[in-house]
Length: 237
Image (cartoon, helix red, strand yellow):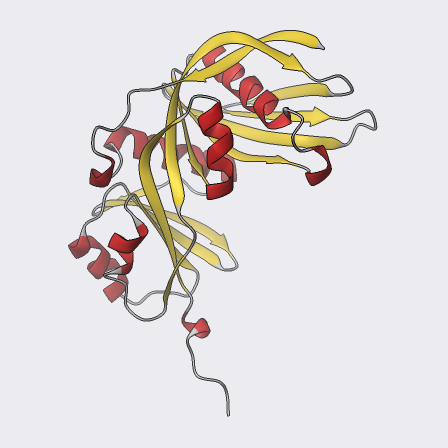
Protein backbone atom coordinates (compact mmCIF):
# COMPACT_ATOMS: atom_id res chain seq x y z
CA UNK A 1 0.00 0.00 0.00
CA UNK A 2 1.17 3.52 -0.80
CA UNK A 3 1.00 6.14 1.91
CA UNK A 4 0.15 9.75 1.17
CA UNK A 5 -0.40 12.77 3.36
CA UNK A 6 -4.12 13.37 3.54
CA UNK A 7 -6.71 14.75 5.92
CA UNK A 8 -8.78 13.15 8.63
CA UNK A 9 -12.06 14.78 9.64
CA UNK A 10 -12.23 15.50 13.35
CA UNK A 11 -15.27 16.61 15.29
CA UNK A 12 -16.22 20.19 14.50
CA UNK A 13 -18.11 22.30 17.04
CA UNK A 14 -21.56 20.72 17.02
CA UNK A 15 -24.86 22.51 16.98
CA UNK A 16 -25.79 22.65 20.66
CA UNK A 17 -29.48 21.98 20.02
CA UNK A 18 -30.03 20.13 16.76
CA UNK A 19 -33.80 20.57 17.05
CA UNK A 20 -33.26 24.29 16.52
CA UNK A 21 -31.96 23.70 12.99
CA UNK A 22 -28.61 24.56 11.46
CA UNK A 23 -26.38 27.44 12.42
CA UNK A 24 -26.82 30.21 9.81
CA UNK A 25 -23.20 30.21 8.70
CA UNK A 26 -23.16 26.43 8.22
CA UNK A 27 -26.40 26.37 6.21
CA UNK A 28 -25.23 29.29 4.08
CA UNK A 29 -21.92 27.55 3.36
CA UNK A 30 -23.70 24.35 2.39
CA UNK A 31 -26.12 25.98 -0.05
CA UNK A 32 -23.35 28.07 -1.61
CA UNK A 33 -21.11 25.02 -1.97
CA UNK A 34 -23.94 22.94 -3.43
CA UNK A 35 -24.65 25.53 -6.12
CA UNK A 36 -20.94 25.70 -7.00
CA UNK A 37 -20.74 21.91 -7.19
CA UNK A 38 -23.86 21.58 -9.34
CA UNK A 39 -23.11 24.63 -11.53
CA UNK A 40 -26.49 26.24 -10.85
CA UNK A 41 -27.13 29.98 -10.52
CA UNK A 42 -26.03 31.37 -7.13
CA UNK A 43 -28.51 31.10 -4.25
CA UNK A 44 -30.86 34.02 -3.66
CA UNK A 45 -31.82 35.06 -0.14
CA UNK A 46 -35.54 34.78 0.58
CA UNK A 47 -37.46 35.14 3.86
CA UNK A 48 -36.31 32.30 6.10
CA UNK A 49 -33.62 30.90 3.81
CA UNK A 50 -32.43 30.60 0.22
CA UNK A 51 -33.80 29.86 -3.23
CA UNK A 52 -31.86 28.06 -5.97
CA UNK A 53 -33.14 27.94 -9.55
CA UNK A 54 -31.90 24.45 -10.42
CA UNK A 55 -33.78 24.18 -13.71
CA UNK A 56 -33.75 20.38 -14.07
CA UNK A 57 -36.76 18.21 -14.97
CA UNK A 58 -38.39 17.26 -11.69
CA UNK A 59 -36.10 19.65 -9.80
CA UNK A 60 -36.92 23.14 -11.02
CA UNK A 61 -36.50 25.11 -7.81
CA UNK A 62 -34.94 24.35 -4.44
CA UNK A 63 -35.53 26.22 -1.20
CA UNK A 64 -33.12 25.69 1.69
CA UNK A 65 -34.40 26.68 5.14
CA UNK A 66 -31.84 26.58 7.99
CA UNK A 67 -34.57 26.11 10.60
CA UNK A 68 -38.23 25.18 10.84
CA UNK A 69 -40.61 28.11 10.72
CA UNK A 70 -44.23 27.16 10.15
CA UNK A 71 -45.16 30.66 8.97
CA UNK A 72 -42.39 30.68 6.34
CA UNK A 73 -43.33 27.20 5.14
CA UNK A 74 -47.03 28.00 4.86
CA UNK A 75 -46.17 31.16 2.93
CA UNK A 76 -43.95 29.27 0.46
CA UNK A 77 -46.44 26.46 -0.02
CA UNK A 78 -49.41 28.81 -0.19
CA UNK A 79 -48.08 30.61 -3.27
CA UNK A 80 -48.50 29.14 -6.76
CA UNK A 81 -45.93 26.34 -6.80
CA UNK A 82 -44.58 24.56 -9.87
CA UNK A 83 -44.29 20.75 -9.82
CA UNK A 84 -40.68 19.86 -9.16
CA UNK A 85 -40.25 22.45 -6.40
CA UNK A 86 -38.13 21.12 -3.53
CA UNK A 87 -37.74 22.25 0.07
CA UNK A 88 -34.78 21.27 2.23
CA UNK A 89 -35.66 22.11 5.83
CA UNK A 90 -33.24 21.65 8.71
CA UNK A 91 -35.77 19.93 10.95
CA UNK A 92 -37.12 16.46 11.69
CA UNK A 93 -39.48 14.82 9.16
CA UNK A 94 -42.43 14.65 11.55
CA UNK A 95 -42.11 18.37 12.29
CA UNK A 96 -42.20 19.33 8.62
CA UNK A 97 -44.86 16.78 7.65
CA UNK A 98 -47.29 18.27 10.17
CA UNK A 99 -47.69 21.44 8.10
CA UNK A 100 -47.59 20.00 4.56
CA UNK A 101 -50.65 20.53 2.35
CA UNK A 102 -51.81 18.06 -0.28
CA UNK A 103 -49.40 17.43 -3.15
CA UNK A 104 -46.16 17.52 -1.13
CA UNK A 105 -44.14 14.34 -0.58
CA UNK A 106 -41.62 13.75 2.22
CA UNK A 107 -38.45 11.97 1.13
CA UNK A 108 -36.10 9.80 3.21
CA UNK A 109 -34.37 11.54 6.14
CA UNK A 110 -31.07 13.32 5.52
CA UNK A 111 -28.39 14.60 7.88
CA UNK A 112 -26.32 17.77 7.80
CA UNK A 113 -22.91 16.89 9.22
CA UNK A 114 -19.75 18.84 9.98
CA UNK A 115 -16.11 18.09 10.71
CA UNK A 116 -12.86 19.94 11.27
CA UNK A 117 -9.91 19.27 8.97
CA UNK A 118 -6.34 18.32 9.79
CA UNK A 119 -3.45 16.62 8.03
CA UNK A 120 -3.10 12.85 8.63
CA UNK A 121 -1.92 9.66 6.93
CA UNK A 122 -4.20 7.81 4.53
CA UNK A 123 -3.44 4.66 2.55
CA UNK A 124 -4.19 3.97 -1.12
CA UNK A 125 -5.23 0.31 -1.59
CA UNK A 126 -3.12 -1.73 -3.98
CA UNK A 127 -4.45 -1.84 -7.53
CA UNK A 128 -5.87 1.68 -7.45
CA UNK A 129 -4.68 5.13 -8.44
CA UNK A 130 -5.82 8.43 -6.99
CA UNK A 131 -6.40 11.41 -9.28
CA UNK A 132 -7.22 14.85 -7.86
CA UNK A 133 -7.93 17.92 -10.00
CA UNK A 134 -8.89 21.47 -9.03
CA UNK A 135 -10.52 24.16 -11.12
CA UNK A 136 -11.32 27.35 -9.28
CA UNK A 137 -13.25 26.52 -6.12
CA UNK A 138 -14.05 22.95 -7.22
CA UNK A 139 -11.91 19.88 -6.54
CA UNK A 140 -12.70 16.44 -7.94
CA UNK A 141 -11.18 13.22 -6.62
CA UNK A 142 -11.33 9.97 -8.59
CA UNK A 143 -10.02 6.55 -7.68
CA UNK A 144 -9.14 4.59 -10.82
CA UNK A 145 -8.71 0.83 -11.03
CA UNK A 146 -6.12 -1.06 -13.09
CA UNK A 147 -8.28 -0.62 -16.22
CA UNK A 148 -8.40 3.15 -15.64
CA UNK A 149 -12.11 2.92 -14.84
CA UNK A 150 -13.56 5.13 -12.10
CA UNK A 151 -14.11 3.04 -8.99
CA UNK A 152 -15.00 5.90 -6.65
CA UNK A 153 -15.37 9.62 -6.91
CA UNK A 154 -16.36 12.77 -5.07
CA UNK A 155 -16.30 16.53 -5.27
CA UNK A 156 -15.68 19.37 -2.88
CA UNK A 157 -16.58 23.05 -3.25
CA UNK A 158 -14.68 25.61 -1.22
CA UNK A 159 -16.56 28.62 0.11
CA UNK A 160 -14.66 30.81 2.55
CA UNK A 161 -13.36 28.73 5.45
CA UNK A 162 -15.84 25.93 4.65
CA UNK A 163 -15.50 23.01 2.25
CA UNK A 164 -18.71 21.35 1.06
CA UNK A 165 -18.52 17.65 0.18
CA UNK A 166 -20.83 16.52 -2.63
CA UNK A 167 -21.49 13.62 -5.02
CA UNK A 168 -19.41 11.00 -3.21
CA UNK A 169 -20.05 7.54 -4.63
CA UNK A 170 -18.34 4.16 -5.01
CA UNK A 171 -19.15 1.70 -7.80
CA UNK A 172 -20.94 -1.37 -6.38
CA UNK A 173 -18.16 -3.77 -7.45
CA UNK A 174 -15.54 -1.71 -5.58
CA UNK A 175 -17.28 -1.20 -2.25
CA UNK A 176 -15.90 -2.21 1.16
CA UNK A 177 -12.32 -1.56 0.07
CA UNK A 178 -11.80 1.79 1.75
CA UNK A 179 -12.26 3.81 -1.43
CA UNK A 180 -14.90 6.12 0.02
CA UNK A 181 -12.52 6.89 2.88
CA UNK A 182 -9.77 7.58 0.37
CA UNK A 183 -11.93 9.98 -1.64
CA UNK A 184 -12.94 11.85 1.50
CA UNK A 185 -9.33 12.12 2.61
CA UNK A 186 -8.15 13.37 -0.76
CA UNK A 187 -10.87 16.01 -0.95
CA UNK A 188 -10.29 17.17 2.60
CA UNK A 189 -6.55 17.38 2.06
CA UNK A 190 -6.86 19.63 -0.96
CA UNK A 191 -9.43 21.87 0.77
CA UNK A 192 -7.27 22.16 3.89
CA UNK A 193 -4.20 23.17 1.89
CA UNK A 194 -6.33 25.91 0.35
CA UNK A 195 -7.38 27.30 3.73
CA UNK A 196 -10.64 25.50 4.53
CA UNK A 197 -11.10 24.58 8.19
CA UNK A 198 -14.57 23.04 8.40
CA UNK A 199 -16.20 20.40 6.22
CA UNK A 200 -19.96 20.36 5.63
CA UNK A 201 -22.13 17.78 3.89
CA UNK A 202 -25.66 16.43 3.77
CA UNK A 203 -25.70 12.65 4.03
CA UNK A 204 -28.30 10.06 3.16
CA UNK A 205 -29.22 7.41 5.68
CA UNK A 206 -26.88 4.95 3.93
CA UNK A 207 -23.96 7.39 3.76
CA UNK A 208 -24.23 8.56 7.35
CA UNK A 209 -22.38 5.51 8.69
CA UNK A 210 -19.29 6.12 6.55
CA UNK A 211 -19.06 9.76 7.57
CA UNK A 212 -19.53 8.96 11.26
CA UNK A 213 -16.68 6.46 11.03
CA UNK A 214 -14.49 9.29 9.68
CA UNK A 215 -15.30 11.58 12.61
CA UNK A 216 -18.14 13.63 11.17
CA UNK A 217 -20.84 14.70 13.63
CA UNK A 218 -24.52 15.45 13.18
CA UNK A 219 -25.18 19.17 12.93
CA UNK A 220 -28.90 19.13 12.10
CA UNK A 221 -31.51 16.78 10.64
CA UNK A 222 -32.63 17.66 7.12
CA UNK A 223 -36.05 16.91 5.65
CA UNK A 224 -36.49 17.05 1.89
CA UNK A 225 -40.00 17.52 0.50
CA UNK A 226 -41.04 17.86 -3.14
CA UNK A 227 -44.22 19.11 -4.78
CA UNK A 228 -45.55 16.33 -7.02
CA UNK A 229 -49.30 16.86 -7.36
CA UNK A 230 -49.51 14.25 -10.13
CA UNK A 231 -48.82 11.52 -7.56
CA UNK A 232 -52.12 12.23 -5.80
CA UNK A 233 -54.17 13.16 -8.86
CA UNK A 234 -57.19 10.92 -9.57
CA UNK A 235 -56.77 8.47 -12.47
CA UNK A 236 -57.80 9.69 -15.91
CA UNK A 237 -61.23 8.55 -17.08
